[in-house]
Image (tube, rainbow, N blue to C red; front, side, top):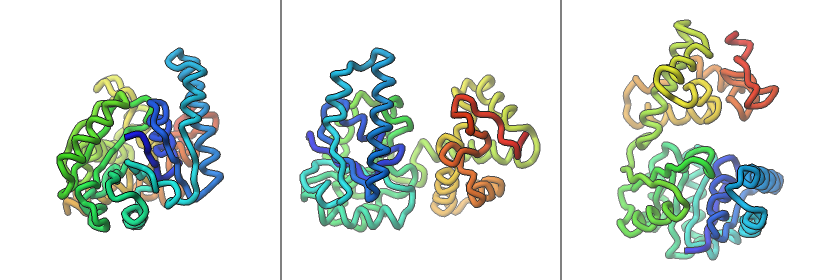
Length: 295
């Protein structure tokens, strides 16, 4: 397997494309927006520069990585010869179902169709295709070139052959794949999102401030990043979407998103991507300060 297509050129999509290309795979990066593709290639180039500066990559390897990526605005052209397609579009069920229905038509019959979804049912996604045995979840972590984990999610019909191929492929990317079954939130977000939601409730109920909550979790629980800062990093809109998937999937009120989170997303404060969430990023991620609303 050498030909990979990635659908979506945002943070996760360009990170996935970067990683496959760095390990010698031919990558077709697909997005309907040509400006987004240009931005993605610039982001990949800057991230490769960081690797070169750290001595983990050479200039020659950087050039080879970029040469391994071809951009497309037309899905059909981009996936025709691909042996694996990884969808990394917005965490929206209707959008993903449309993409996979199209992929089933455009991709070669033997191609594996994978989703980078962080919570949406692989079984439901596979249901709109005629190849449920070849549909699987490949949930990469952000930032993709750095984080080792790949959550490999088996849908109800996913075959052993498909699962084994994706597990071995993940190892070839120097990742650590973990196989999990298809239930809402899988493992990572079923555990992580209730913790983030509880941290938001702790702020909402005035138990402690933003920095205080994050400091307790960093120093007391050895977390590298506090839950509120992590929520900003993930995107508060993504956190909200995942919590709603958990709430709908399990029918359990314990997954109900905190009203503060709902209000922040409604107001457009989505974290790093919008410039403000629990922290303000006007001076950059490394110079973030607690948002004025919570000061």
